[in-house]
Image 1 (cartoon, each protein chain N blue to C red):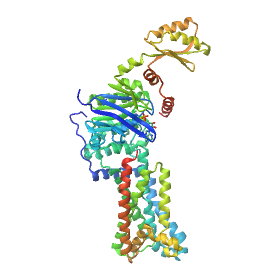
Image 2 (cartoon, rainbow over the protein chains, first blue to last red):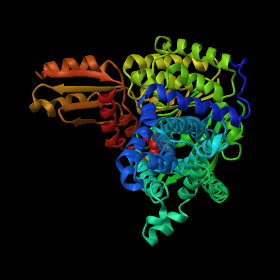
Image 3 (cartoon, protein in one colour):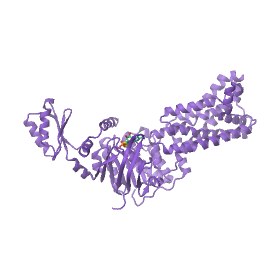
Image 4 (cartoon, chains in turn cyan, red):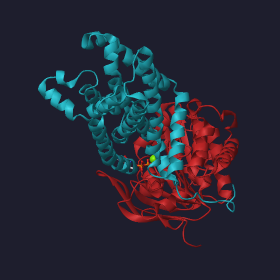
Length: 262
Length: 327
Ligand SMILES: Nc1ncnc2c1ncn2[C@@H]1O[C@H](COP(=O)(O)OP(=O)(O)O)[C@@H](O)[C@H]1O
Ligand SMILES: [Mg+2]
């Protein structure tokens, strides 16, 4: 470690930096196995509770309700995955790690990007577990293999996109409690006020109007169409529009907040 | 002497209506240790954060290795290592994984990152705990890992923000040794501290700041000369003897200094060490029994008293008491 042999670090490598941070965040699962439980058991619990508690009343039978509800429950479950991004970034700030990262010659987007990339892996994991379990309970794809793959790609893109607004909450909030409060206040009503659990036509007129413009409804309708077979062009296009809009709005806001937070 | 390795001119930074830095000038010579000394809230961390590009100054300019912190922050970051006031390590990774991650972030190959991590863990006496999660580490181990993390990139400039606050005396001495080694290898160190003796032992140059302003600057010797000698303290067994004790000690006060009483303790800054022996005899002759009679180095408060005429804030003592009990 002598001065002559010192070579200064080179220019930041965005992809390499992002992957290093993503790896770090996935390694956290080993120290916190509850995360794995949260990613695996929780979605299954939701699936079982909704299908068997409400199924009979809503759709006449659990089996029929499973066909209707699985895509909705899938999207709902995935909408909650980005809490890890929000809480993780928040804790990196409060523990001083962000100061270390910001003092290193690395890409400024890597810390947020790495979090989101790690959550992308979690999203795929949760989606596969929930879908697999749904199939075991009797769910049948009506849209064929292409539809199933299309649905997986769509929900993964949805999960990654939802990381941006959640990351914004994570870098803005001062405490983990306030991350949870804001996160739930936004995500919970959005997922319920949608076509996830009941057809929106059954809602009172004003709620129906809200549910119709809710972006989550577009994702659920598209996922449902892809998984069951049916018209998908409109909801898929709407979903892509939302993906672009949310990313374009929240990614620069989040990165700016990350850079400038004192 | 050429251009200073780290240079700041007229740094100003406010937070709301608090002025954390009120026009600070610093000039750090390459390959030396520069001590930024001041009580809690003086603005030390704010200065370090500006020099690390984490915070923008509201006025003034600063360069590190000739690169401007405002206009060339990426160049500055390539050359600095920062060990903040609180250990910034990932508790959910092992010590080895923490250092490996930093190496990879700095663009070092996987094999090289492992070898640097291993060498640093050995050097900082963490090899046995290398694969344990950092959340199981003691405070001293975290501090060492934090310092190791700031060295992975082999930075020519190292910032240490209160590196020994809260450490036990032994870990403190070990850390001082490590800092001296790094300087011997050519690193330029900017160190903040609340402890006069730490700045005295380590720093080649010291700047004392208070309320965001420089109140004194010079070598440790310059400062000690200004502060005067050591402090003689006596605690009479019988509180009734307090006034008599003060009268006796007063005779040994250095020029221009008086004795003062705090609680049951009389203290006086003395001109030379022989005062201790004389004081023992005089107290004995007067029939005053003392519970404690001792010589000690001037505290930061006394440095302040000597320089500014007022002591550093009471909060400092509270803070240190708290940190002491957390350690
Ligand atoms: N992020 C911040 N927001 C508000 N006030 C701050 C912030 N950082 C520092 N300060 C204030 O600036 C002053 C100097 O703080 P600091 O630089 O941390 O001092 P030191 O490190 O010497 O203890 C203090 O009064 C502190 O309360
Ligand atoms: Mg500080």
